[in-house]
Length: 258
Ligand SMILES: Cc1cc2nc3c(=O)[nH]c(=O)nc-3n(C[C@H](O)[C@H](O)[C@H](O)COP(=O)(O)OP(=O)(O)OC[C@H]3O[C@@H](n4cnc5c(N)ncnc54)[C@H](O)[C@@H]3O)c2cc1C
Image 1: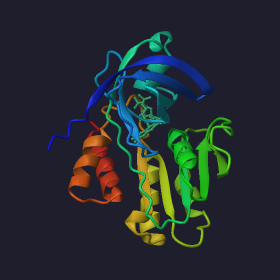
Image 2: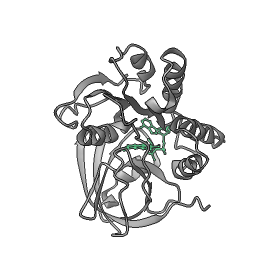
Image 3: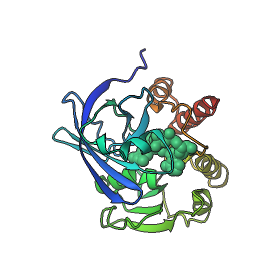
Image 4: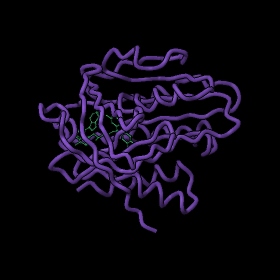
C-alpha cells in the first residue's frame, strides 16, 4: 500500500492578522482537493523554497478556498515565511487532508482542551457538533470571539515563559456525568502526560479520548517534521486505536531528533 499523500497546489490569496500570535491565510486550492469533513482535519503545508512540511488544521474549506490559521511563535520555518511581505501571492503545496476526531456514537458530551495551535480545530469541532461542549483554551491573546457562541469556554492564560501546563489543568478538571468524548491537542510532552493520566487515573477506554501532540518544544527550527498522514493510514490499516496511532507518531518524532 502506498503511504505517499496526494499533493495539491495552492496560492495564498489573503493574509489577515487575527491577534498578535495568530495569522489567517486564505488559499485558492486546486479544485481536485476534497475535504474529509472531519472537523479536526489537517493538511501538510510546504512553503516556497522548502521541501519540509508543517501541519495545519483546515479551519474551513468552501468554494475552492482553504483557510488555515497559523500560530506565529519565536522562530520557525512557516512562522518566518508567514510574516514575509511576499507570502501573499506565493505558490505553496498542500497535502491530502486527514482527520482524527471520532467520538463514540453514544457520546453525551464533548470536552476539548488545547493551546493556540489547537484553537482552529476546537472552533471547527464546536461549530459542527450537536453535543454539549466544554472547552479549555490556553492562549496568549484575547481571542474571545474566535470560538462559536454556545460552547462553555474556560480561557487560560499561556505561561509567559512559553511553556504549557495543560496537563495540570486536565488533572484538575471536574469530569461530567455519563459517557462522552475528550479531545485534546498541544505541546507533545504535555500530551504524553495527559494520555497517562486518562489511562491510569481516569481509566478511560481508548475510544473515549483523542490526545495529539501538535508541536514539540525544542530550540531552533524543528530538524524534521514527521508527517502524521502515513502513520495515520498505516495505523488504521493495522486496526490500531487512535491513541496507539498518536503514540506511534510521538515515537516517530522522537526518532527524528538528531
Ligand atoms: C495534526 C496537526 C494539526 C496542527 N494544526 C495547527 C494549526 O491549525 N495552527 C498552527 O499554528 N499549528 C498547528 N499545528 C502545529 C504546527 O504544525 C507546529 O507548531 C509547527 O512546528 C509550526 O511550524 P514552524 O515552521 O512555524 O516552526 P518549526 O520550524 O516547526 O519550529 C521552530 C521552533 O518553534 C518551536 N515551536 C513549534 N511550534 C510552536 C508553537 N506552536 N509554539 C511555540 N513554539 C513552537 C519548536 O519547538 C522549535 O523550537 C498542528 C500540528 C499537527 C500535527
